[in-house]
Image (spheres, rainbow, N blue to C red):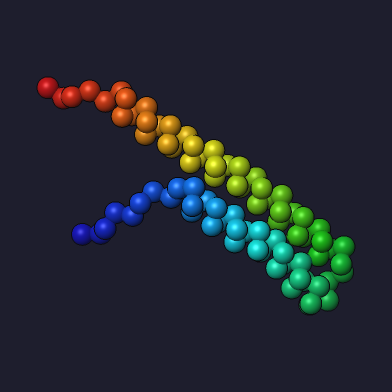
Length: 81
């Protein structure tokens, strides 16, 4: 029988955005090392940063909504006859 995993919370979101920020720095460095034009490398880094910020906002909203849904569910639950 599989062991249930805990739901991802704010710590998981923080760790995920930390890795994404690391990638936003690493990608332009690798592109520059491979000979890509500096403007293109910076553009790629900025594009990744924009996507990272949008994903972070959506992830935070999802975690908040899930927490609110669990709280609403607990308040609305009634005993079964």
